[in-house]
Length: 292
Image (cartoon, rainbow, N blue to C red; front, side):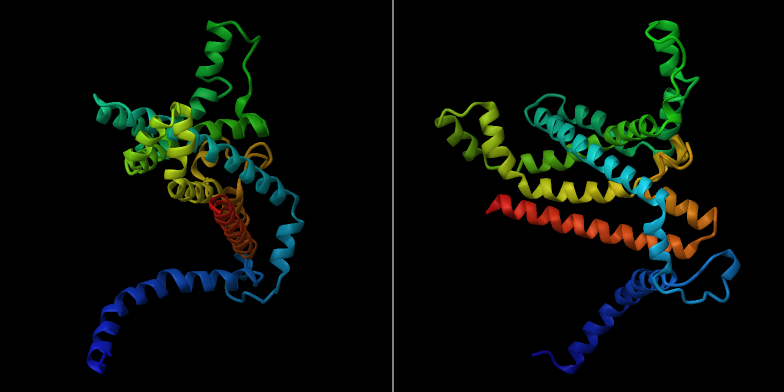
């Protein structure tokens, strides 16, 4: 049993952390939710009249919202498996290398520490209408009859951002999966050898079950990251044409800071948070069903 002195000591130790948590996490969330229920814009910064669910109704009635929502879904569905599959592939290869393994790890991890802004500018230069890719396709290889406007259409512009997202994420997945692979007991591989399992069989029946928890962790983290894509879209396409390449965050940024619709942007943030929550719960249940 804790006496009063011990309780006060524990409370004193917890108070600084709880204060910071309440000030910088709980209060902003509560304040943001209240903003989503108010008609808050540049013209009503002082009054902030209560509007109920008007902002949420406006979000779901907005055609552009559904466009950017689909864009975010497609971006996530493409980049998350792409990063995980390629990252796991590289991790498996590096796990079997004994010489120069550190060098190869550093090389594969370099894209992760590269600035998103710099990488996005490089990709925009490569895929621009007058960019490097069109120069090689038209002037050098002569496979096209002119410049292709990669960044001026919806799906080709998103494809460029997806390629960048996959390229940037391979190294992170490699590190996560490599650490998991090194924790799989070697006895299981020896038992699989005795049973006559080949390389693919060992990967399927030993490696994948052994890193299932890491796969779930990476899946959830990457899904959240996919929905939070911002810099690459903003720098490469800027949402053009007509917001057709925008994602949830870039559209939210536009509504808040370009049009001043802070209430709309706040409502959109909660719609996005609920979507991520449902997706995370679904992913957990899928993994549990596979385990059972």
